[in-house]
Length: 249
Ligand SMILES: Nc1ncnc2c1ncn2[C@@H]1O[C@H](COP(=O)(O)OP(=O)(O)OP(=O)(O)O)[C@@H](O)[C@H]1O
Image (cartoon, rainbow, N blue to C red; front, side, top):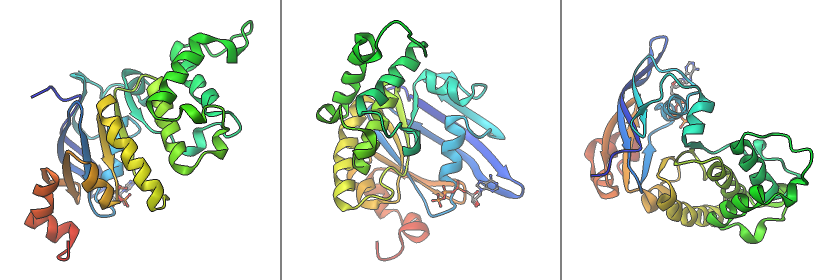
């Protein structure tokens, strides 16, 4: 089996007496969507924050492509290729989709000021930016201001930005939140294709999306993973049905 891109071992984080992450181990493998589900307060966001580097674990291991990333801050982890989608507010709403991705391409090249070159004609920026837009299916929306994109298209744009920054894997925290059924369906189709580009650790409350997309599902309850398996494994797992899905599931 392929080496995991992301390898979490026995991660622990307490807030006072509350064990928000209580010995979590999980792997994200190339090409997969690994969904993390669990009831409110189970510790999903706390886990993602520790993986991304915005929260320090008490103990345990986090390896990305075999490298111990615990000593690295969030920016350094992003530089290694850990893609975490930005909130919509981090897009420049008045700029076109293309320009938004170009800013990321520029950041990746490490040059924030180019006094002598009109940015929109700088092919070292426009080419990777157009390529990233094509990869997420937004080529025909390149010139549309971010503010005028639909909710789902903005999510796609955020992912294009992460790709332009060199993302090799994605941590997505509730990407379907706030979307109607049509938007969720479109985003589901998009994420389905994205896994071939970069594997995804997906936190999502929309169970239709989870069951449609996940190669594997881990169920987190009170900071512990009580089961990991395929969609069928999880649907039929007695402890999962009892703890999370409810009897009617
Ligand atoms: N900074 C903090 N200080 C104290 N307690 C916290 C902190 N962050 C989270 N918690 C607690 O840790 C537990 C896990 O919270 P977390 O937000 O990770 O859960 P979640 O599974 O993401 O929930 P939801 O699905 O509602 O987003 C909760 O009981 C929460 O109140």
